[in-house]
Image 1 (cartoon, rainbow, N blue to C red):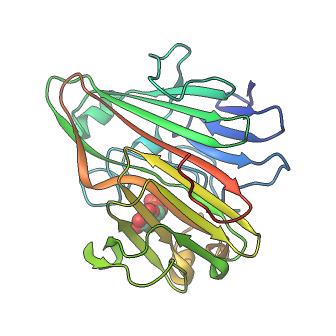
Image 2 (cartoon, rainbow, N blue to C red):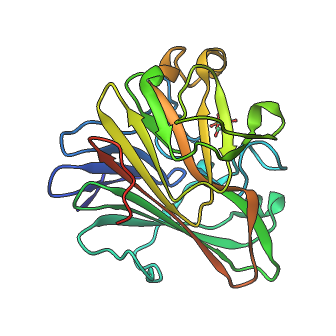
Length: 293
Ligand code: BG6
C-alpha cells in the first residue's frame, strides 16, 4: 500500500508491518522499518527537515557529482531538488512490481540546473518495499540531450548501528580504495573485515555485488546487493568532524555508518538517448551472509 503523508512524502507499507518513507524533497528515503517497527536507517536528531538542503540521514542520492571534486554543490543537486511522482513510468525490464509496495519518482533539471550542468536528463527512481521487508532502489537515468554526458552517482545510505566500535563490514577486504581524507590517494585494504576506530572517508573501487554490515551488539546484519554500481563509499565522520556539522549531534557518529553503493572512480557516460540503471537492495538478517540467490 501507499499513502500520502502531508504533501511531500509517501509511506510504503507491507502486510507484515514493515514500512519505508520517501520524501519528494531529494527523492530521499527517510525511514525504513522492519515488521517490529524498528528503524533501520539513521537520521540525526539535529537533522533540518526544510529544503533546500538534504536531510542528514536516510538515503540521499548523490548525482551528478560525488563529493566536492567538481563544479557543482557537494554531492550534486539531485538530493536538494523537489522530485515529482510519476504514475505511469516506462516499464522496468526486470524486478517488476509483483508483491511489492512501490513509488515512482521523476527528476528533470530546472532551467537553473541547466546553467550549471547543461545536460538534459530524465532521472526515474523506483523505491520498493517487498513482502519480506527488503528495500530496493532502482535509478534509471536517460540522456535526452543531443550530446553525451558523464556523471557520478551514489546511494548515500546511513545505516543505524548500536555502537560503531562493535560494527564490521565484510566484502571490502583486500580491495583498493581512494582515500578522500588524502586527496583521493589510492591504497589497498589489508587484513580482515573492516572495523572502526577513527574517521573513515573512502571509495572502495570495483567492490563485489554483495556487502555485509554486521552489528555485533544488536545481532543484526545489513546485506547490501548492488547492480551497475561498482564502487562502495564508507564514511564515518568520527568525533572532530561530527562537532563541525551543524545538523549532526556530537556523539551521533557512534550510531551510524554510511555505506554507499556508487559509481565514482570511473564516471558513467551516456550517449544521446541512452539509459543507465543502478540498483541496490537492502535486507536485514540475523547473522552474516552474502548468498547468491
Ligand atoms: C561522504 C563523503 O560520503 O559524505 C564525505 O565522502 C562527506 O566527504 C559526507 O563529508 C557528508 O557530506 P554532506 O554534504 O552530506 O555533509
